[in-house]
Amino acid sequence: MKSTEQIQGLPIFSLTEGAEIGRVKQLVLEPSSGSVRLLQVDNDQDAIGVHVLPYESVIGVGDFAVTVESSESIRDLHDVAGARELVLLGYKIIGTRVLSRKGQLMGVVQEYYVEEETGSVTACTFAEHSNTESVRVFHRDNIMTFGRDVLVIKDESRIFDSLQDEPAPQDNVIPLTASLEVTHAAQETAATRTDAASPQGAEAPTPGGQYAYLIGKQLREDLTDDGGNVLATRGTEITEALIETVKQAGPALFMKLNRLT
Image 1 (cartoon, one colour):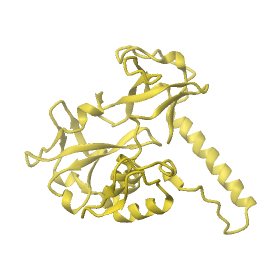
Image 2 (image 1 turned 135 degrees about the vertical axis):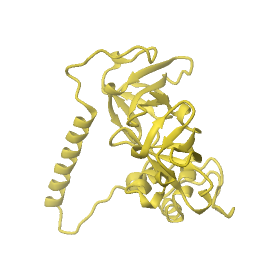
Image 3 (image 1 turned 120 degrees about the vertical axis):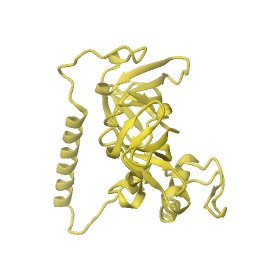
């Protein structure tokens, strides 16, 4: 397994052309699966759009480079199903608070590790009670939920002092995919009941939708577009209207908004 620090910045090589065709700019996570779905690419095409490498197209992630079959593996963001939504969502594990199933706040995630073959998150290190000198580890089988505001773990006793401490087999552990299926089924049942009880055509949207985590936060710096025009000044409180404006401008500006909060 490799940490995000080991992967970000790696050159991407085409095996067919024997050439470097870009670099890994950042990892794009899919919270529902707990896996890296995309690698955002930094290359000479940045000026004309956002380009990504679907993780399924990755042949290898080594110490020196990421390898792919050909330059065609790198695609425009809009050509990959679901990619734009994931990039706009901007889900991040690093900096997320760790909450136990029993409601104890354990600390803040400092780093996470992925399985090179699949992109699946395998472990996380976190600063215990925000003390950067006390860094501990939990493995994937102890993760209950990759949440918007917190990462939920199942068992406080299964936290280790190092990555080398392997988790003991747990017969009573529900796989993450199974817990997600149960959660999705419950959500669908609740939605069905709500639809049946509501007047036809009535809607009750959650304020902010999937971007509600941004609303109410303040910009740490001025938000500017590619032309240098100031769209919102430092200290501006983020509203639904501002989010919609930024979304219309494209994924690159939306990612910038995420970085400035």
